[in-house]
Length: 254
Image (cartoon, rainbow, N blue to C red; front, side, top):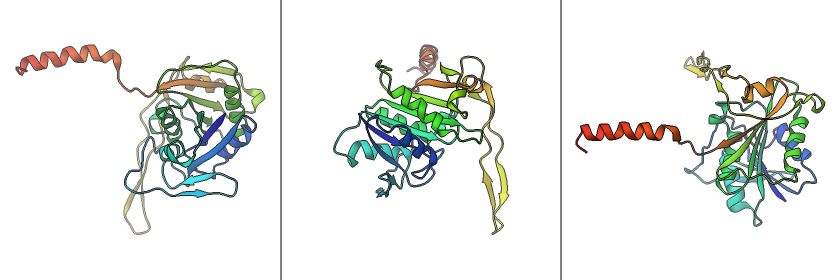
C-alpha cells in the first residue's frame, strides 16, 4: 500500500511527524506538505505562478503552496507510482462542524478524493497536552481494518481525536457535523507604523453540538468519525426552488 501524507500546518509540524512515525510498517509512505503553516487555506489551488518542491533530509518534501497544491502535485506529477490513499494531518487543532469549510487539512483530503483516492483528514482536539500519538494510533486502526469500506464518490472521513492518552479514549462514534455560533468579532490593533490592522476573531462555540454531533463525541472522549461529501448541493431545496423559479419565470413571461 502506498500512502500519501500531507497537512496544512507545514512540513515541520510535530503532528505530521507523529503520523509518519505511527504508520510505519503499513506500507510505503511519502510526505508532501506545505513549506509553512497554511491553516485556513481551504481548497485554494495556486494558478498564478509555478510551484517549488524542496527535498528534506528526513525524506519529506515541501511545496511553497497550499495543502491542495501539495496533494495535487504529489498525485499528478511528483511520483511515477500511483498512491492507494491519502491521509491529511495530524492537524494541531480540531476540525469540527463549520471548521471544515476553512480547513486546509480537510482540503488536502478532499483533493485526494477528487483525484480518485480514498482519503482521511485527522485532527487533534487540542487541549494543550499534544497527544499526537493517540491520533496516529486511531488512523492506524482505521487503515488496518480487514473490512473494506465503500463511501461512494467524493466522500472522505473527517476524524477528530480527543487530546488524551490512548487508554482514555472511550471508543469510536460515527457522527454528523455540528455547527458553531457566529465567530467572535475582529480584533483591531495598530502596527508600529501607526496603521490599523485586524486579527480574525476566534471561532464561535458549538451551537448545534448535541448527541450525534462531532462536538458531542469528542467532549465525551470518543473519536469522532464523520463522512463528508464534497457535493454541496442542497438537494431538498431543489423542488421548492424550482417551483419558485417557475413562478418567477411565468411572471416575467419566460
